[in-house]
Image 1: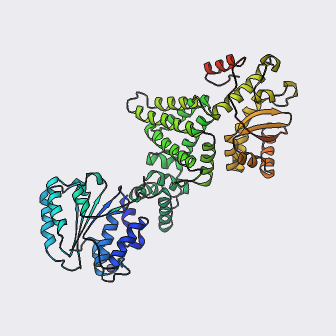
Image 2: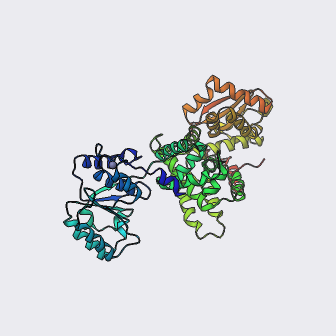
Image 3: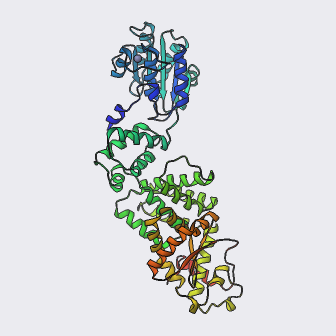
Amino acid sequence: MAVLYRKYRPQTFAQVLSQKPVVQTLQNQVKSGQPAHAYLFTGSRGVGKTSIARILAKAVNCQNNRQGDACGTCEVCRQIEAGSFIDLVEIDAASNTGVDNIREIIEHVRFSPSSGKFKIFIIDEVHMLSKGAFNALLKTLEEPPAHAIFILATTEIAKVPATIISRTQRFDFKALSQEDIFYHLKQICQTEQIQIGSDVLELIAQNAEGSVRDSLSLLGKVATLGDNPIMEECQQLLGVTDIAVCEELLHLVVNKEAGQVPDFFARQSERGADYAVLNRDFLEYLRKVLIYKATGGRADFVLQAQRLESLASLAAGLEMPELILIIRLFLKAYKDLAGASDPQLPLLLAALEAIYRKTGPGAALAAKAAVGQAVKKNEILTSQKVGEPPVAAAAVPAAEELEISLAEARELFPEIIEEVRKQNGPLASVLRSSQLVVTEPGRLIVAVKFAFNKQNLENPKNASLINAVIEKVSGKRFALSARLAVLDKEPGPGVLDPLAQALKVFGGELVE
Ligand SMILES: [Zn+2]
């Protein structure tokens, strides 16, 4: 739907969303009455190159010239908006590549403007011109008449000859941030009185690839679904993945839930997922996690608070080398997709390979927990027999003291998290990133990686919420406490070795 894009195309410098440095410089030049004779606007599509070129054409010819900006109301401004201004020549080089087209322009250049101060030539996609056409253009750019202004625009600066670039004043247009786009869309929805949820706008902003034009065309599509469209419908319409799906997949990887992975993919297939899209969008999600982690919590993206909380907790569950490994695995899956007979397979493989990654505290924590559980299950393996037991195993009390076994508690844990989520989403995220390691009479102990997670779980308000939920779900009174997981080393070799090997054979999960 090009309608929204045309309707909300900026008509003056003041209305331009972004590209502030470019706009400021151009406006100052117009204000001082000394515009350059040749400009080169470079940047990806939909970032405002032609819009700004047209505003510049207006501003230099505007009858009211307000502080170097176009007024938008005078005869000239209105004619340019309507496309009927005789001194503005626009050429799309993509369809006029030949030398003849350029010669025609050059003929025009010699004549003085008929109604404005300047004759403006906008050549879009200038990199498409033939060699002959570039040469002809170069001659004109070398000695442009005082009344002519050339504005060349390109998405591929590398294909523009250096001789042309050196004759122009170059402006690099930036891709718009997801945040810019999100707020722009929000504003338009308000003006248009379209009811679309923030989660859907976020989805659009994520998928617009920095282009306002793309974002508005996606918005136009979504608007056809009527007010308050459902997220799933929007995803299907736009062919994109909900961030919650990416969150879930990474959650499985971080928590090494290999057994859940096939189910996850089965559900994706059921809802008709395009695996190339899922893979691409998952990589984009991983990129966000990477940026977040690398910058210590800064983000170049817009996410709702709850989403950001989940991302933060997933990021906290991974060491940087693990994260890099996971990204590499999914990049490879993306490459492998093209030649795969089953499009699900490369992703499934990548997910499992990521789960069985060798290093990192996540692995140690999971191993420790699994071992603790195994010790509990196999009462033959008493601490006397195994000698020096690992920390988690030592903390498991004798079976008769337990009012709830670790296995039972772990089975209830997802339900507990889900109940907590209904009342406090961020708190549930913290729980989700933790690992239930030990049960003691009256106590469930989870391991967390960071002190702030521990504080969060143990602050009185949160603790009483969690404890109430535990009671509701298990029918027993347990207090949850958190322990900082000091993951000094992985469980050592010795008696535990056969068990670890068995774990490997049985897919890393202990079968009850
Ligand atoms: Zn005007």
